[in-house]
Length: 368
Ligand code: IPM
Ligand code: MN
Image (cartoon, rainbow, N blue to C red; front, side):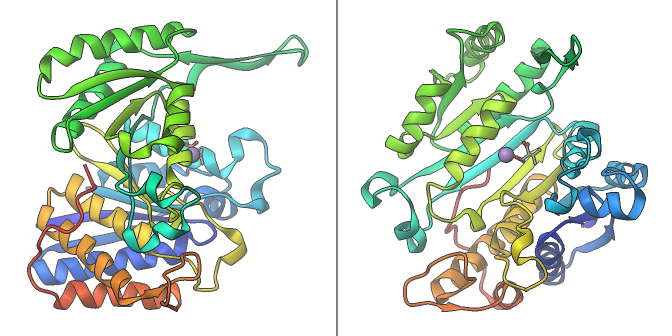
């Protein structure tokens, strides 16, 4: 297959982990005889420095033509004092919105080798394997009006949804649950918010179309609590943009391996933007210390979701698993008895595995 991928390296460790992602894509292309072409574009702080805006028009145009987009990370102290519309994060929010990427998928799965680094007791976190499906282009993040009023004495943000926006994310979540353990938790604040009451209504309507999936409603405060008391209770969680932002950060630390977590932001046709969950880590940028595995696992999600390449995706996941088992790791994770190496060495080892290992057997299954 021929595919065109736009790379948005961004800021901090973004360029390093993007390089690792590109190397993995090239190894996959070589092994499976695909033709992948690449194009770099600016976003975030790098785009502010180069072009005076966090989301240049050229970047948006290139992404619109691409089959998939990979993003490293955006943000850093250098740009913290800029006004809101000029912040690096605006680039990320803008590209999600402009590409219509309404579904953010964040799988959190425990790697056995890393569980001792979890802040939770082993018995609590073992067997955790959940997927947060976060609505990404509506809700509190984008609702209008959002402004200061009354000489700065009042302020308003708006949580607004059209029914179709709730329907499509709920559909996506049911579909994800269907190919996992068939359990969906819809998270809201229906005891207080009108938007949540409509969200519940839509979930209730939709469930008839997915009789094989068991669905329940949970208030967001209770869900936050349950995520730390009984994370393995959850299979798929679906929720509003801001609730999903908060819960996905909470979930990301459960398994003791933030540096391992991938994410996908997709729309109905599969086109998507894939990025590691971790941030730009400016304190270690440029030192080849960053863990590339979250980016490499994001490449697995890209192969699967945007290109429909299931076997290739599994090969990448398997390679990551094998490198972890070999004991080599970057300094952010603690593999007992392992050896700390640089990010580029880890990427090289993953690439070697992809190029040489046998056909896949399904070792990890987390990316839906
Ligand atoms: C995330 C990030 C972004 C968000 C920020 C950087 C705007 O926290 O991807 O979760 O809030 O969506
Ligand atoms: Mn976030």
